[in-house]
Image 1 (tube, rainbow, N blue to C red):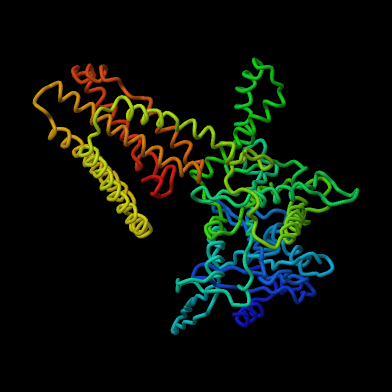
Image 2 (cartoon, rainbow, N blue to C red; image 1 turned 180 degrees about the horizontal axis):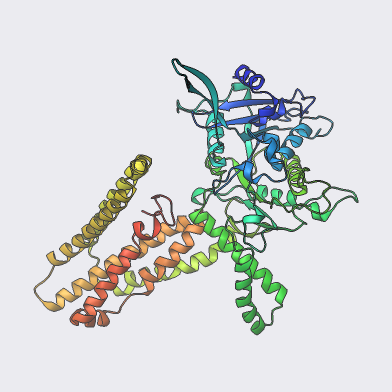
Length: 609
């Protein structure tokens, strides 16, 4: 593979570089350290990346070698190519996508690679460092040219290279983890064995989202936006020490009197937060602050404290929402494999060059300061030769400098579940005279069967979703989902009504008492299930457990009509019809195909079922 790469480099020439390896083996690095090695790896038919391995100068202190992975690239959510947005580089020199000239982040990373490979500059390095960058997939295509004359015609074929745009950073992380760890997937080409012997301890994703100020109407678009995003799928989070180490590295500054605050990614005109949502350039914080300011005037709070509280409150809701509904961050695959990982998302305006910059062709100072911060973070991680385990991995963060641990937010979660505990205890000790085992068994069994049917349909959707979308059957599958849920609801209702009518007694008093026992028995089981299902969810994923418990606790325990009022409603046809319509509308509104999937959750998960 390396021989193929060298042939491709010589054939394309120095003016048509396409990846990080091309820039490293070009004249941009006159002397390449023996500890630096770059490999162009084609994982699948559509995904390829360049990976640089930097061996430590000191060697591993412990027996097992450890590694830190840094994934660098640009993410353009609107599909805008990087050449059209280019930060401060001359796009005329970027005809085929010169990796160094493509963006300032690439140029800064190249200088970081050179520094990490120098024993004199980084004698502290004790872990192997992998730097991964997306690479454009090059495929050979054959074109045919025909020329016609008065009497003769000739055709000639020539071979050209078709370059596809690099994939999303999340796909690159997934492909790197799969090729690094290996597996049974024959479509994934594994990395060479000499690249995969260290144990990966940490993974950092540096995502560059370029902001074009000329096409942005936001009044704060000239402000650099830095986001430290630790959220993973299913409420997974990395060790808190890694998050704080990243934040403190961005907050650090070089020693000496030459430090310029305008060139700092943290102390300059920047905003740092821990959620991926855009709050309108601070407009949401300002609106929440105005509301809280009125409350603060009554309570005698100062304006600065109220403003900071409003900002932290918006950040807290954003962090919780990111854990529940996403979006999926690029480092998610690493968290699923037990690797502490996070994403640093940069949004640096392309024309926000500080006045201290000498020329428009120089690297933006904020990009240079980011790579300095990454070096500081690598220095911190290199001092620890074991996995981060002394901190916590269950937390929520209002801001990158503040956190709420599991031991603090578990108390309001318990208080929310208290009504279900009280209702279950009151039913068991006082209200419930006789438990209807047969009736509850039939209803619970029908709910289990309906859940199994819905789960089976969800697995079919997950398996054939891509094929259906390609064939244009997405709308058809959505309507089938509605039908499946309607049939499931109908099955549960019919089972409950059938069990209710089969046990009707001849005397009206006994019938009313029997119905009350059935409803009480079913409510008792519902409260117990609500407690036992939410208890582990609150301990594992607070962002999912707290909203769910806050939604179900009033329905199961508090919003219960008294027996006398239920009899009045059942005798009055108007009230009975209104109640029945309200129940139907509530079932439709809370049905997963209507509200949850895919509007909040991208797919059917055990939590949704």
